[in-house]
Length: 231
Length: 286
Image: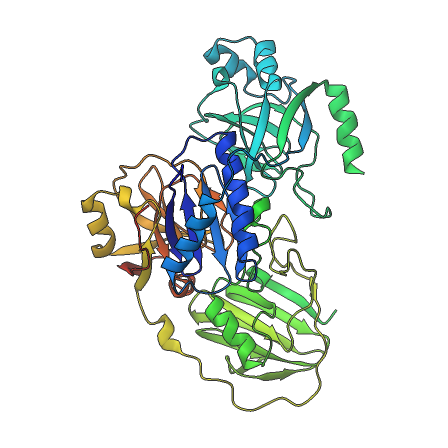
C-alpha cells in the first residue's frame, strides 16, 4: 500500500481518515475515489462522507460498535484505490472583475508582493485550480493551485463584511465568498456568478473535484452578468 | 396556517434532527440543540422521533393557535401559561383555536421545545426542516405562521417520565479530538483536572469557554469538524462547536463531546462551571 492514513474514531458515529501526503491533485484524486468506494461498499449504513484537503469524514447512521472491523474494511478499500485512474472533472470558468472598486487589497498586495496589478491579475487567471471541497460557508470553495508568488497572509483584523462574490487570497489559497460574511482574506476582485442557490438541484455551483479557471471581465460586463443573474 | 407567533422570544426556530446531505456543500448539520429533550417532546405526543418542533431560548415565546391539536412544551423546568393560567410542562396539553400559549421563563436550562401532534409542516431542505439562514429564515419573527395538521381525536394517558438526572452534572464526557496528541502533557492534564466555566458567548453555532489555556499549537490545515468538537484557538480560547457549526475549521480539534454531553452542555447557562472527563473510544492516536 503506497499510503498509510490514520484512521481515527471521531465520535460515536464518525470516523476520520487523515492522510499525511502532500496536498495536490493526486491526493484529491485518492480522496474522491476512496469517498466513492467507501460509500458504495456500505451505503445502507453511511449517512454522509465529506472530504477536506487531506481528510475524509465518514458519518454512519448508527453507533460504531466495532471500530476494528470498520478500520479493516477501510484499509482494504484504500488498497484498492487506483492512483492511475483519474476521475473526470468538469472545468468551470468564473468571471472576475479586478476593478479597484472590488479589489480592495490589490494595492496592498502589489506593494507587498512587488508585483504590478496587471501581473497579479495575469497570475491569478493563468492557472487552473482544483476544488478540494466546499466548507466555511455554503458554497465556499477551497481551491488549490495558486501561483506561489501570490501567497499572502490573511488580514490580522478580519473585516466585518466581505460582499458576496468577493475573490480573495489567504496564504496558499484563493477562494470566493458565496454570501456576505465577515472575513480576513485579502480581496482582489469580485465575481457576478451566484455560487450558492438553494433553488438548484445541486445548490453549490462548484463541487469537490471540479476544475476552475478565472477570467477577467470589465466592470460593465460584471454589471451585465450581475443584473441577469438576479432575475 | 395553524399557529401565529405573537412574540418570537429569542432565537426561536423550527428544528428536527438536522441534515447531513448538505455537508458537502458547506451546509451545517443543524438540528435541535438538545436532541434528548427534543426526542422527549415528540415521545410525549407519540410522534415520529424526527418530528419538527419549535425550539425557543430562555423566555418570551408567545404563540396563538388557529387549529385544535395536542401539544407538549418540553423543558427542564419552566413557567408556561395557556390563556393566562399556568400549565404543566412535559405533559400532553389540548389546545384549540384562539388559545394563547406563553413561555414566561425557563427556570432551568436554556432551550425548550414546543411539539405539536404529528409535527410542524414546512419545506424540507436536504431532508430536514431545521432553520438555517442560507436555506430558510434564520429565526421566527412576530406574525410568522407555522402549519400543522389539525388533530381533534382523543389523546391522553400518562406521558413518559422525563429523566431530570440526565442534566444533573457539570462533568462533560469527551473523547480525544484528532489533534489532542499535539498538546503537551501539562495541557492534557489541565484539560481533565481544571475547572472551567462558560462565557456569555453562547449561540447555536458555538459555546465559548471563559478561561484560556496558554496555546502552544499552530493552526491546522482546514479539516472536518462536528457539533461537539472543541477547537483551541490561537489566543488559547476553547470554542465548543454546536449544532449550526461550520462543517470545516482550521483550529486544532482537541476534544470531542459525546452526544449526551452536547445535549447537557446546550442546557448550561453562561458562567456555569464545568469539567471534562475522558472517555475512551479512540483506538489509535492520529
